[in-house]
Image (cartoon, rainbow, N blue to C red; front, side):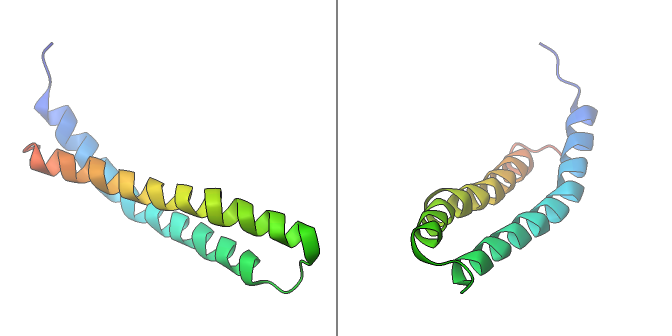
Length: 82
């Protein structure tokens, strides 16, 4: 299989451009999820269930997305796609 290096370079540049935007959006989503956890407006079992969902699933998932984006970009740099 023949790989066109120029396509990889363009993909890396597009990934770099979109990484900052996506990371900012993911960080905003994480901050809003943290805000929900800290909110005094939920009480009792509903708050406990929501906090559990956010702390055990949603926030770690958002953090993993940020990590995966950075790994993909760094792999392109490491592989010499310049």
